[in-house]
Length: 95
Image (spheres, rainbow, N blue to C red):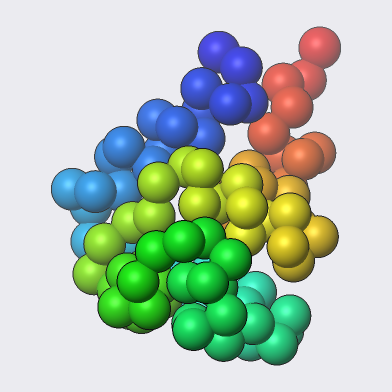
C-alpha cells in the first residue's frame, strides 16, 4: 500500500474515530500556530469558510485531503505527517 493510500485511509477512518479526529486537529492547530496562519487566512487560502477551518482545528470535522495538501505546502510540512502523525521514516517499510 502506497503512502498516499495510507494517508487517505487514515483520513477516512478518522471521520468515525474521535481520537483520530482530535489527533489530526491537534497537529493541524499546532502547525497553524507555529506557522502563524490564522483560521481566516487558511480559509482564504483554501477557498473554504472560516467556520470549516475552525471545525477542523477543533476536531469536529476532518478536512479533505486536498485541503491538507494545500495547508502542508503553505506551512512547508509533510502532508503524511500532518494527516497521520508519522514521519517519513516511520511510514517507509523496512526492507
